[in-house]
Length: 409
Image: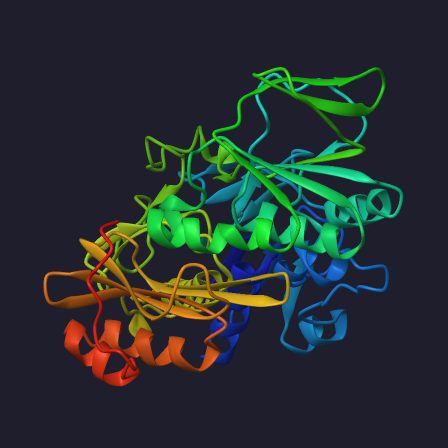
């Protein structure tokens, strides 16, 4: 690789790609390009601990550590275009950067609320600067409205509630988190909001965001006006691939993510992808997936870095998905897939402070969700990876009352 490995996206996936390539013996140039001004940092705490008054960003590496690994870090640099024929990137200022191998690790951008007015106090969360802006407003905000009861919105709601704000969550769907964990478990974990004094409104339709220069209230379709000093929009994210539109690279027709093979290589030879932006056939689950979680971003970045820089060490990327979320001092964890024929609470129940729910298709364990059962989740993940029968999971957990009749998802 005479021209070097270039990675676009200086967050977790991009960083792990650069580090893995170097660690595994790649001796060529490595350039890591990021559009933020900050060194790569850990994103999950932005909606949790960082919102507290004394929260500090957790940087993954120092400038000295990048220099020691001979990784050139270019921050505050935006890539405008990929020219695959010239094997070059075009930066926003017109500069061209040549590459022999390229990894797309640009992640996802928060979706905006359609038709939202330009009012002060309506925000989204993705970056460290976004989190700082929310934290500064939370100190003064009395009434906080979260639009979207997904994991990011729920984590922010929990943090705001702990800081003393009056919090209301508005969710358009009848049950939150169905795509992530299914209807049964989505309803169970969402009950944590009301149990901790946070109002959750499902099936909510927003008629208007009210205010002169800054947000003052959110009006619902039924006429209710909910006071709001701060509105946080958390309605999901879309792959950040607009800069690839003219490249000819295959993008997913629904969300615009990069379509890859099992090795994380895109439709353009030598161009790979990793992290939130990536669609790929996951052999461990026998399904094509795009994941938005810390574990996948880290592991995919590592594999993409090796595959792109060291062809003789190429291997498919397979994983049993795993993610976690912290609300109201409770730990939610999930492994596998929520696409299952049935779901059973085999320990605890939907209204309890601890539970284990298993997802079953045929006689196979395909997923598991836990609330405050940290010691069990990784054992269940291993069983899913081994394609273990459902009975093995029951034997592992040894529920006191035996198996229960499944609750149909």
